[in-house]
Length: 561
Image (cartoon, rainbow, N blue to C red; front, side, top):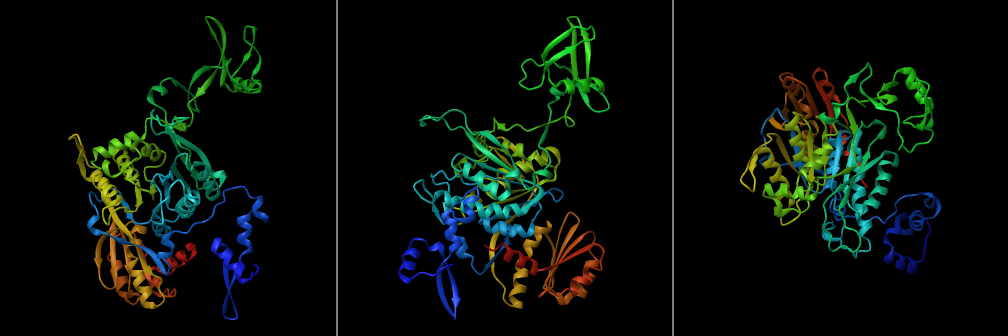
């Protein structure tokens, strides 16, 4: 760092306030230019050697609004939908997705299988709001604002993914290039998987001067590509009928070795047939591979009415499955609009993603996968998850996060997201009068809330008690069984959550825990990590115990930017 005189500082501060830092000297604040920040801005030193994305970070309004506060959740009991306790419970969180992601960093760290998001595309047409103002095309910091917005959220999202997890991000031409570089930086270029290209609409574009814009994209990144399972899909039954033969390795059919149109080096050579006739041609595989195939029995000569032919075993790969194709058709925005129209919600939301797109993605993963969408919009992701569960009796769970932009209490969450999920669960009548049976699952509704950073025992105890619903989300237990001044008990599908507010009630707590049947997750209030109560409760074989709120406070401190 270096000092500068008052006049220079004043001029620079007005134009480049982000380049300044303040230090204390003899009890007085001294303002200095930060040489490291100047190097970053100028691309000097090591920064000039780094390939990647560089932008000016732009603070968000919530950062100032949440100073001295910690995010948590408030459960809105009147919005919960309990349809069938034996079926999965999905979660809808209303609030800023940055705050929600910080909460989820505690409740679902390394616990999410799949993230799908459809963020604002930053087209300049009132689709992206930053600090309560829409960003238009003339804004000189349009891309910087969008990248600042996305980077904060994607870094948090990465902490939620399992090592085998994958994130899918819908985007169009406006920010696709920038988003690709940003994700390369956050997730690693080696974890970039081939993107999907989706035909979002067909035709139109009469106002286009050059090329009709029909496509958008879904970027795909793995948490760790080496651990991510393949995205295979079953072959159609009609395709499988040709594989009529089988050996100890797999099903197969005999296919010709000749490939005259194949563009491959080293496959042009002469083959001698059993009748000593010779044929020079282009073959499917190299001469060395042919010799090996003939020796193993994977290739052979057969005599036909037209003479001898060379054939090989065309095997059914990977237990009858094949990789996904990168081009997605038949899943355009028009389908999503029709679905919202049938739900009676089309007037409140533009450009919803179609159910088929999300089911296409969800089918790549197990029937018990946990999904997260923190740009939930109309709620298509959760609707798709519930629909798939109904089709194959799966137990997938979905967590949605959305704000409620619009007039107080009458924004997107209130008008679209929640009503859609309620109708999907309970059933509805379409705009044409057709009755649609409900999918019969469950929903919990939360809003983001804040608590002051605790500075005393009483404040810490209050923060812990207010955080009870975060513990419900973490354990997946939402049904209240019992609550008093000492503890609260929740349950779900034979599992219990026990939250002990009063560490001095440990003997009574131990007695109550012995009465509960099945696995129990217990959270014990511990100030300054006093573990006497925790050790007492750990004597029960069916109880796992964690001390809080210190781990939660430590996490928020670690995530603080």
